[in-house]
Amino acid sequence: MMAATEQKTVYPRYAVIRLRGIPTTPGDIAATLDLLRLRRKFTMVVVVGSPSVMGMIERVNDWVTWGEIDADTLAEVLRKRGRIVGDKPLTLEYLQKWGWNSFEEVALAYISGEIETLACKKDFKAREGQRPPCIPYLKPFFRLHPPRGGLNSVKLHFSVGGDLGYRGPLINDLIKRML
Image 1 (cartoon, rainbow, N blue to C red):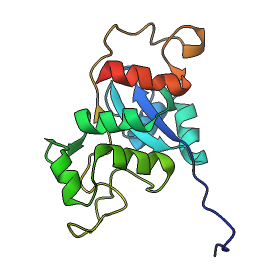
Image 2 (cartoon, helix red, strand yellow):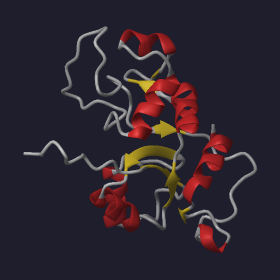
Image 3 (cartoon, rainbow, N blue to C red):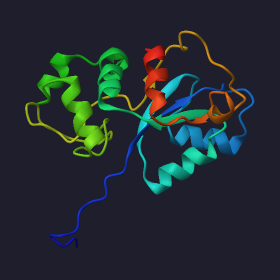
Image 4 (cartoon, helix red, strand yellow):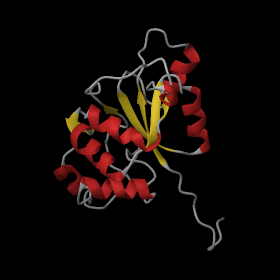
């Protein structure tokens, strides 16, 4: 049981984008990408940077790029590429039905740690009008376009002029090119 002085650890939020394709993916890497819900090229997930998730990201580091996402970029991703079950677009009216006022409010709540996850689990039950701690029926991944202007190299890491691996806050620039 947590004491009154203890606080819950708020991990940073990371955007992870798969940049390499499917055919040559080794089995263990494919399984980890599947757990991260990165099943296709140019899909993105937003994850909490807990130690277990960071271990998975390190394992697939040669297949993805990742970095800290900011609230403005996340709001734009939700607005333009967010989908709910049935492959319908995520709309402001849908968010308001569940008690959220704007895409920015959801993004800020997620980045600040007020809500733990963007997409609810399949067995989540909530009543309309009552704000849930997530967005019901939101797909847990985002399908992005290939980046405008192209990529440098999907065989080299970002630190040596490529596109793979950790890129820090510069992930936001890549995401904006892919919307």
